[in-house]
Image (tube, rainbow, N blue to C red; front, side, top):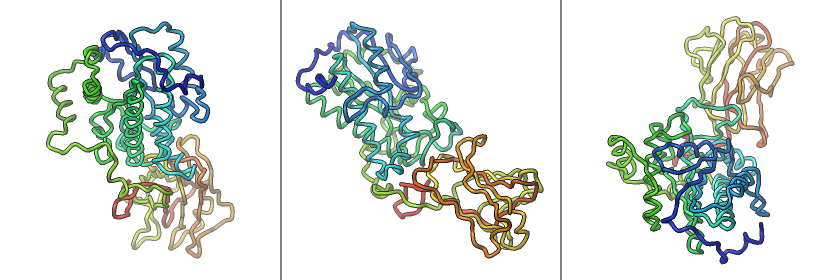
Length: 431
């Protein structure tokens, strides 16, 4: 494999655009978006499951990894391949679940980890081209799931803020286009196209283009097809462009067109030119995230539960006398926890919290205990319980505070701190 990988100038013959008869589409669930019968008359979609771009290839030795082997195996079984092209659809799951976590754990930054994903994709595409001589299209990752969608999967938790993940998506797309253009100059027919800048202006995902927060609606796909057609036109692949048969209702086509050209607003360039004001490119900072969370109680003795200390009250929330009374704190997305500080009630009834437990996790049915109070009454001197987290700790969405016995449950104040790369230009948090 490594022998032909290094032969950049001994390229296999490429199929002529006018002879294309079939498009082979490989990838994660985003590959199925292109399965619509309206897209192209002859295509075959190979949905590989929750496939990560990270597991396509080992950059160090060019060894195929799990999903890379799967793609090669399918192509080799279909030999001889004639008049085909390949489309790769990978990367969105990496960005949604892995990139922010890796940047924090590896003591790097978002740009470094996002560029790793782009490098894996472009290197794998180059390897495919050298082996099979087929034109390769890379469908860049779409903008990440909006925090407004309730489509969190405990097995594949969405990690980091929406803005951090969309920043990573921009970096991946920018790098893919840059590297594919460089390879084109060397004779490799590898093309990259996408619409992340259209789907997430200002790094906030436009939910109207998504069915479930992850996959595109027909209108969203329409934007993708327009991007594909534009790519074909700019690279003189007009005969392949005619291979497509995508059709939409007139109203839908008009909306796609207006959204694509950015009517009534200036189109945003893909290059992330303003990111120095928004994103940290060294190490993440410890951020007070308390104002961004949601809280729910086993029951409510008080009409306005919160985590901040209240004026003229000794507690921030208060349940009834429940069996295993609890408070669930929802961070909306999984985040890298830095610190949880908990104050007992400030005025009286301190003994009610003597059986406090703190649990964290991404599935409320499978939570991990990180603090278990076994020392009796605490907080008499207004000192908080501190639960610190190592940088390697798995990102979590939920924090569960509960009592191990039947009692009223109330606390004075709770503060949640996370590790984050994203700041407003003023330095204040905007998650």
